[in-house]
Image 1 (cartoon, rainbow, N blue to C red):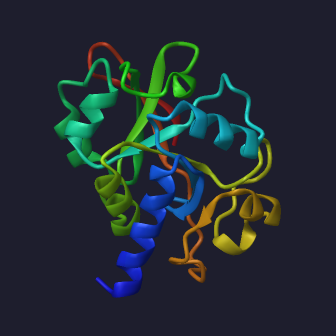
Image 2: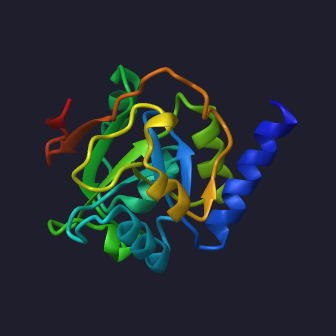
Image 3: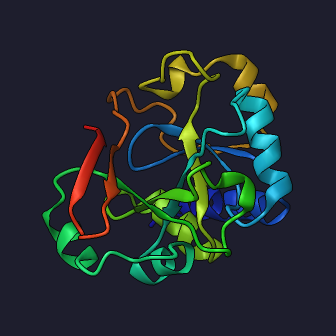
Length: 192
C-alpha cells in the first residue's frame, strides 16, 4: 500500500469520526457516506442527497461479525451466500438497535453489504470499526453517476471530505445487487 493510499484512508476515517459526510469510492459506485451509528450524520447525508427519510440507505460492513452487529437476524446460511455471490450484494435483513434509527426502513429492515472486493472502502470500514453508510453520489431521483467525473458539483461542494483516491478511474461501475433474506434463508431479488 502506498503512503498516499494510507493517508486517504486515515483522512476519510478522521472525517467519519467527526460525524461528517464523505464522498468516497466503494466496491460499486462512488458513494456518500457517514458513520452508520450516528443519527445526526445520517440526517446530514439525507439532507445533502435530498432523500426521503423513509428510504433507507445501504450500510457497508467489514465482515460477518460486523454484519451480525447490525442485523437482528443473521441468515444461518450467510457464509454460503457470500461464497456464492458473483458481484457485490446487499442483504436486506431485520435491523438491530446498534444501527442509527434513521437508517432503518419503515419495515424495520436495513441493507448490509460486506465489502470484500474493494481494498479502499474495506479499509475505511475496518479502521472506523463501525458500518459506513453507502448511498450513490447523486441527488435523489437523478441518475447514478458511473464515475467520479459524472458527480454533480453541488454534492462535491456539499460534503465535508472528498476522498482523493480513484477519481480518475474511468471504468464505469454499477450499483450492487439487492436481495431480501426470507425467514427460511431464501432470497427475494429486489435489484439485480
